[in-house]
Length: 429
Image (cartoon, rainbow, N blue to C red; front, side, top):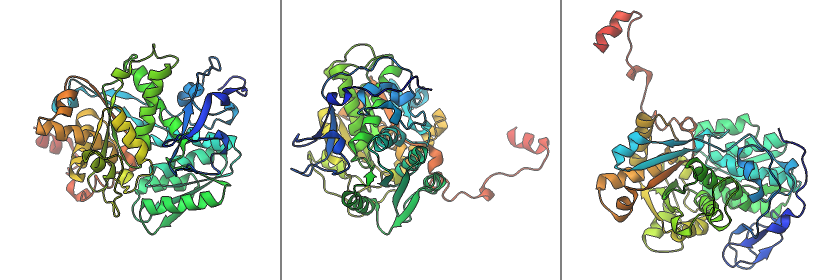
């Protein structure tokens, strides 16, 4: 429970809303009346202009970093105690992959089973603060589950658009359970997001909460603070992340930059920019506009018109946050690549069988990438990784989408024994 709730007098003066590209400045609390820069059409970003301290208070997980989050009054917080997920040291897998140190940040332990909860607690809290009674998102699954949960917690209406036939049943079940209004779009995710954007731009009573919303990314950046705390104040050398719409990699890089620029209370000292992690963004081969742009040395993308991967969470051909994600990769000295669905599912099984971590397919893409490098046994990135600390962000729980793993598996394929111990003894002998 919180102690007495008070408005943060003057906190707003410590943040700005800027265009990510041309740096045009906007009134921060007007966000939702518009979603892009009116001058150049690019995405918007919340920027912290100076340090703010509200004093020490006990708050749930993500909100322990409230001084770095643009919410003006903590009575508006909508939380399910998200964040502070496990950072699991994977010694078995590190040995197989030839790495000195490998960790998995298991975001599948968040309340609705994915990293989206970090962003939604901030996005929906800001919706409450601004007086919204309606929220909307387009989704491949995890966003719909998360927004539905936090909207129901806040007592506001939630509208979800999903691409017909391209969303895991486990995720749509969550949105149904949380009471969202769900509409299937005869098209892909990009079509769904285009429709949602058009509706929200015309009707300012509905707040769009996809990753183009900069307040969502303010919650997602907290994973950088947690990783550093969990490593005893040490920043990892590499952070490897699955990339779909591109918001998460940019948010985590933003968190590490804030850690360097100003320090974070509770994390020892400031950190040298020379030792901030290299951000590595991994996509599925059939939906890899960001990875292909990076491999070609470009800073813009060619959208994939008909993306296809069974890792449904990253089945996005025209990522709305591509400009931010490519900036994170280039600015950090990182890299980007793609892996096949076959490599993703093999890595999913490897992570589960060797470390006891069952993640959804998209979450296994970073492990698939490192395994791909290990099998090749060469390359500058792999040679650099081998002696350093690598953190893989696994964004969602495996129970979100078990159908892909179970494809072709029937009860008849499982061994049956008679109801006595002797029959099993013979098998085990």
